[in-house]
Length: 77
Image (tube, rainbow, N blue to C red):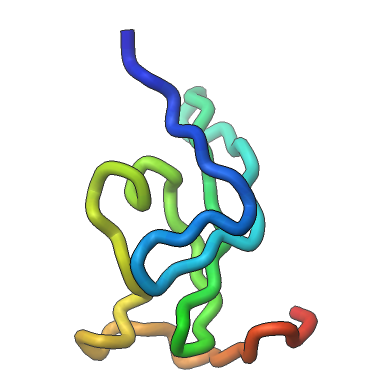
């Protein structure tokens, strides 16, 4: 049996901090989704399994693929 990914708000994966964890149905399957904020200030969304098992540790900012929208920690969005 596949083990469930247990992620909570505030968990840190490399430069990413989970700010919201929720379940979304995609192709008739439940998937955990994480809204994260990177240390560079970018807000990004990833599947929970990508954070936990695919070694996703940053938004892409270190290799030039990060979002152009920047948010500062503590800023409302």
